[in-house]
Image (tube, rainbow, N blue to C red):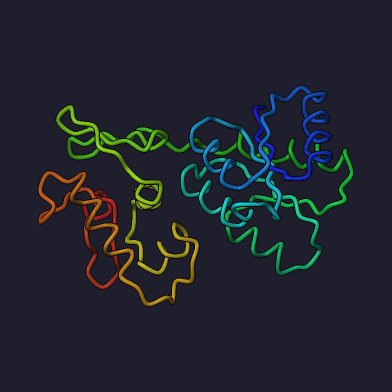
Length: 228
């Protein structure tokens, strides 16, 4: 497996890298949250080992951003805190599992192996999608229409991924806030509508008559197939 280790304590980081390398994994390591997000978006990894307490950007936000950009990427969170609230926050942010420091070597390797088996058994989500003449390369955050490349933000990719994943139904604004923005669905904001309006300007043939991201009256939004 190719694993990204995100840990700011040098001795612990080096020890984890040595452990995982010795177990046959290919390992990259970074020491802060922003570097983790940049590397996790730019490169392909099979798993992220993510510390909760990080400089520049905390582990919870790193987890949210990586989960938005790469929904299928397994994230194992490390935390020195034993409080239940911290574990719950990590899982709600998108972590697949957690290990509390100090942890045993065998436990860490066993949890990594368990996540790898879980991912191998799950069907892979498409990274490239085509709809109504527009081609989306979600991994690269790029859309293409009529030969023209269109840059997509990580948040826009998150919206597209979630709508496509649940294309058999309408998706509420509250659900998008929770799953893509990582915030409370009860928040009173026009953020979702504004983001989708901008996204339609980029990807639709006719933004005033959208055929990719459609409005579902009384619900929210849907991928076009959900409206059939």
